[in-house]
Length: 144
Image (cartoon, rainbow, N blue to C red; front, side):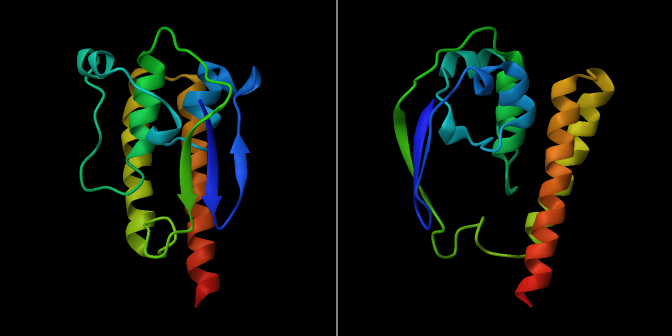
């Protein structure tokens, strides 16, 4: 679905044919956020798609599992959500090691998924999360 990012940046994200594939949404999406998709509650309950509790970036596994279990979806080619980026004290703007540890825990969970279903999507998602750890470590290092 389309969304607008405001706050410390101004961006419109509108789905394209390329960004609406299962491979992209599950593996490559740079916005694996729950708020960038709409979910049917019956679908989530039927497929036991849940958040991991007490973890930063819990959206990553939720979105991966939801997208991979989905058989169909609709596309909104206009913004239906407005996200405010760069809020003071938000978890994505606060640099700490919990961000790193929780991303590592997400990768561990994805490696368990990979053992059962070694798909292109899970491999892409794992690589993207490893890249995020590198970025977050650099952000912490350069903020000192």
